[in-house]
Length: 291
Image (tube, one colour):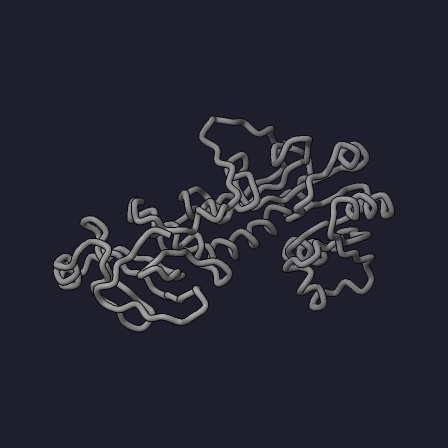
């Protein structure tokens, strides 16, 4: 039976492996990760568990435990040639490779309206480029945001591991490039609103950065604000009222919501919070500006 060393930053594939009685000889938990904060709720007492906080610690750990197969699920450290030569190395990546390589493929799937999913693949000297063992694809629909997308990707990762295990990890095909693939790792500019963008892209941004740790940023009267949802409003009564106001001037403000005009489009931001340290309300007539 294949002897696994699992290095991960999230718990879901590890839980699936435990449920399927895989021969896990050691678990490397990425320091400060979701798995690090929730490991106490998993039944890991009989396993060798290490917390990994550097590439060197990863290398030392693998040299000590000497597995047959390294299974990576959210490992931030690129496995070097020495590791790739010594061990079978498999990765589970939360996208439909070869599309959406990079650190933040789930966010990218919402931002660019690309399919969600997961891929189990052999690791080679490239980044997310090895032969595909199994893959699950999930369509992106208008009724989800990144919070839903993360949960679906976690389910897909478990599903794709089970499919790969059933195949005994035999490669199904190599990755074929078409030139339309995206490599996405988020940058601070990605969640800043410039108001020169297409309103539909602003809505997509709000969905892509809707989780509590992020949100999108804009300025109003020289103060910085964060919001978590954007909608295009089509109600004729609201549109008629807001259209009488100048562009980018707040036409309606209530609770944590503002409504304003961007070109001919009426936009509604909600979940607004001031992030400049002093709480400040947005009132009717205030001018919105780029972040």
